Length: 80
Image 1 (cartoon, rainbow, N blue to C red):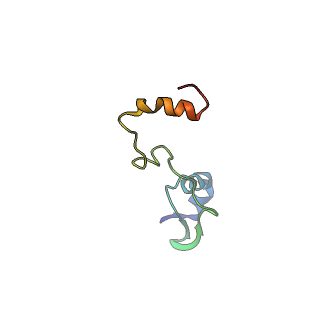
Image 2 (cartoon, helix red, strand yellow):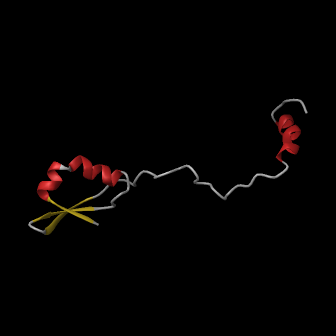
Image 3 (cartoon, rainbow, N blue to C red):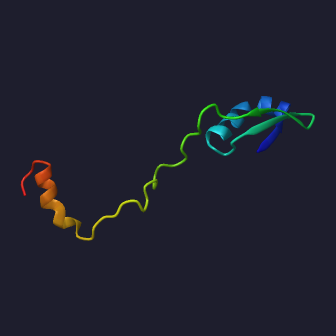
């Protein structure tokens, strides 16, 4: 949880929204005179951070993959 005062929130609103969108913070508390008054959070779910490597370890490639070339060509309508 990140807390910020009202004046800072007014001047840095775009930065605060970016922090929420990027997943840096889940919720930002806005305080007046040190007392929490409001919460700022995303309406929907945050965007996924990274997709590269999402399936890492879920698939394997056979060591003899070249031996499947003819079968793949046949499936795709090519010649063996």
